[in-house]
Length: 292
Image (tube, rainbow, N blue to C red):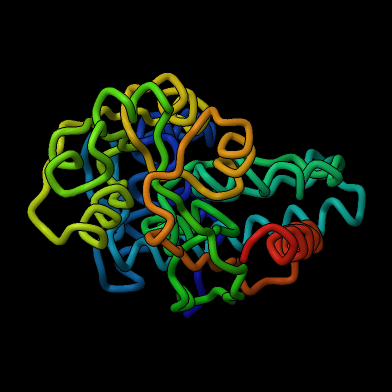
C-alpha cells in the first residue's frame, strides 16, 4: 500500500482541528481539496476513515492510519531536527497520557530533568488511557492495561496502592461507631470523575455489593486531596499522597485491612525517537523507586 503523505497530513488535520474547514485553514488549502484527499485515502484503503460531524471523528480503520500519520510526522520532525532543518530544528515535543494520581505524585519529578523536551500532557484514567495510543493522540501512556496496543511496546511499572482515608472531623461526624456497612452507606465519599471506580471497588471489597452512599465529584488531584482533608467525604488516596498526612494526623486510615492495588504499565510507540526513549527511561526508573 503506497500511502500519500499529503493525504495522511489531511487526515491528521481534520481530526486535530475538528473538521474540514478548520483543517483547510491550517493546511492553507480549500475545504474541497482537503475533502478530496480524504476521499482518495478512503478509496485506496476501501473504508470510511472519518465520521463527518462537529467535531469530525475518526473511525476504527481511520485510527490505524491516524496513528501511522502521526508516527510518520514525528519521525520526519526528528530527522529534520537532527539535520538542523526548518521549523523542526528546535525542541522535540512528546505527547503523553498520564493518570492524575501518577501525575500528582511521581511522574513530574521524574521528567523535570528533561529540560530540552517540550511535553504535552493529557490526564486520563488509567483504565482508559490506552485509547490515546490507538488513535495516535499520544506517543506514550501510563495505563492499567498490560495488553500492548498494536504498534506499541509495554513494560510493567509497578503497583500503585490506594488507602481508604478521611479527616478526623469527618470520622467523628459520620463514623462515630466505626467504619462498618451501616456507616459506610451513609457517609459521603469523594469520587474523582464518572470514570473513577476505586471508591466503589473498595466498598465492595469491605462490605460486599449494594452500597451507594452520597458522593462529591472532585476532578482534580490536588483539590481531591484538599476535599478529603477538609472533610467533604472519605476517599481512596494513593499511599504516596496519604502517607505524610496519616503521619501528621491530617487524615485517618479507615481500614488497615483493606487497600486497592492498581498495576501500572508504560506503553509507547514502537518507533526510534530519541526523545521518547529518554522519557521512557526516566519514567521506568522513577516508577521502580516510587511504586510497590
